[in-house]
Amino acid sequence: MININGRLLDDKEAHISILNRGFQYGDSVFETIRVINSKVIFWEEHYFRLMSSMRLLRMQIPLEFSPEFLEQEIKHIISQNGLDAKPAKVKINISRKIGGLYTPKDRNVDYFISCEEIKDAFYTYKESVYEVELFKDHFVNSGLLSTLKTNNKLINILGSIYAEENNFQNCILLNEKKSVIEFTNGNIFLVKDRKIKTPPLSDGCLKGITRHYVLEILKSLEGYEVLEESISPFELQKADEMFMTNVISGIKSITKYRKKEYKTGIAKSLIGKLNARARLG
Image: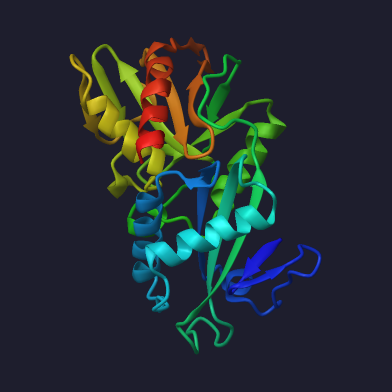
């Protein structure tokens, strides 16, 4: 079942118009959310990121879009798909209503909510080879728009295809200043000695929900300096450890980049703390 503007439809009947502005112009934002046993994980952060994204894109936010309303819509679609007692991934898409060319005729929005079952209820640490490479064919522009989850993800797609074609598990994206910003599907963290770095939002990395909570956890650890600073590609092979964060998989250790093989201790130690935040959140 799929929720289209509050109507529940079977996925075979849930269609949108070819004139949809998300399809025609990428005039759309989305939010990917983890739900466990009908509990929406990190909901407050997701809700405010979605609202701020809509404001930044000059979308008209419907009056009924309260945290309570959207949370109930999420729980309802979970229930209708028989996932009340299971872990699930929910995706909310928001598109501006049909009409206009680059200048929209209507700033009001349509919304679509879908869900699917995922394997693990809480974040688990999985030991596996995870080799990455730089993607240098195209660059992400630094600035606020790149921090949003919009339908304009061609660089992420091309980076993912490059990784697949060259037998890597992921690619690292760069901005126009040739600074490291993120993976194709998650934020990046580097550990060197007692310093832990991640790029600042101003460099164009996604304003990740898991990034936010991992930063909070890291800043509570004794003996480490946590920095939000630009990262040069030259730092990648000098780091002791590299890991990725995203809201579905949680934390993933990178094991190899070119000739460099990494430790995994910090990432392993964060999993339990992140799960604790998810239970409390």
